Length: 415
Image 1 (cartoon, one colour):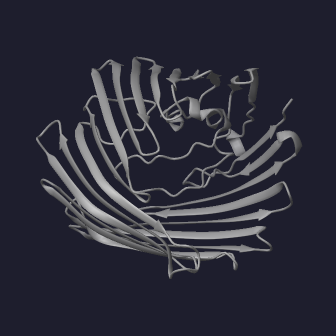
Image 2 (cartoon, helix red, strand yellow):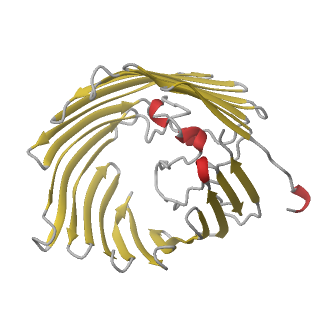
Image 3 (cartoon, rainbow, N blue to C red):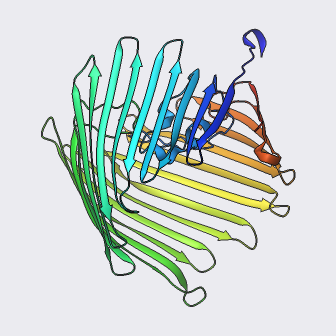
């Protein structure tokens, strides 16, 4: 709108080479705003995994292993091929951005001797001007309905830079019909940097073990319908500085009759010179016959030696024979520092209305406030027709935190 008004056009195409093997091509895609992810902004210490809704990446995603496609944002053209040949699975993907130049490539291969075992390898690379990075990973796993074990190892080669590596081993064993034991050990070197993977802390070795138990009562037989208890213990050590961490805690989840759920979590972490000691509680209430749900959450404690607390709430309602859906969410967090308590809050709400068997609209408003305030309003209209034809009309930017006028139209026509 205004001086920067512009038009954008793209193309998506796909074809089956065999009934089990397929390739897809996309040119100048712009559907990141159309199949929008209506999510909250999580104020945490590590990057959060978010679901990718772009069809070019979601279709055949099971053939690409742990590849995190949202690391590829804007690109001009993409090509991928994926499928199965006997007990082998293959996935290949390449995306290129022309200005400024960037090329991302993923190749994944997996051999499955049995239903619950695999041997696999992956190669992932990113090339930009003055920068190259290559990830090579291998892994294997085997098990049954009673146990499971797997191990993965990866290494990165970065130019300019150095070589990094990561490894992880996991084991799970069933204990009776409702319980289980789990443990894992992993390590990520400080210079391990994969561009197309989601990695939390680097430069740390961590061990984790715990047990859990869950039970489900016949409906109407008891005042509770289900519960789950989990006990865990974690210990980590950092490559540099000799820092060690120790974390332990438990969680309890109870589902009551009348669709009431209660969750309680207690976590204590020690890592010199910091300390975390946090407790959280939430309760949710839903009535399927009346089509509504409501919930409250609260937590407080110490986060990195700073007093910390949060409060959250949500409410949802379905009306007009479930054609109208309304939801409202709120979350506020406080951290006490030298100058007093600093607060961050966010609110978001959405209204979805089904205009017919295949036609619906979503209206969304989002607000975020810390030292500044941000608001965003968007609407999405979708028409799903016969033979997988789809029509989208987007007003605003569903993924933005600043108000921005924008119109995006997309029409999918199969042949």
